[in-house]
Image (cartoon, rainbow, N blue to C red):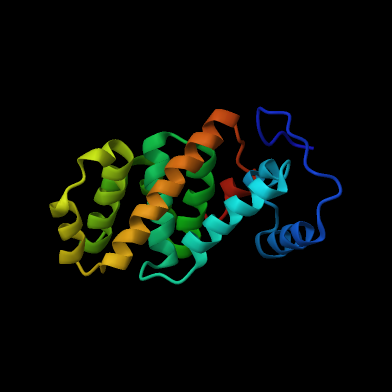
Length: 187
């Protein structure tokens, strides 16, 4: 088995039926079970909490597109220098946008990507959440409203950025390795 993290946290064996079914769906849809999920599978309650929040933020109803949510994940992960999430979510941006150069720009320096005013405002806000959340003021929220985001969208931007700030720290601290498959996706 390929190393998935620097920690020795054996996966529950056997996996509960619902978890095994979820992993089977991942394999069917993605061609793999993401290492982050395998790592959390040492404690099914933690895995379920992680996946519930991730699935709600990234796949649930929102005024943000799936691509916009992935862009937030990449920008936050790039600022935090989280190897796992830069690789995994950079691949998602490449795939969802159909533009490999966008995925690379997002990982390296999102300000060099050719983004519209809406995306730029969203990512400026995500960056400020990551670097200086205590300095966010009403004008930061108003800048989002000015480009068409609703207050619910602002909540979703904040929640997505906050989730990836947390996830990045866990991934980096535990030495999570990205699945090798991510490197070749959507190129």
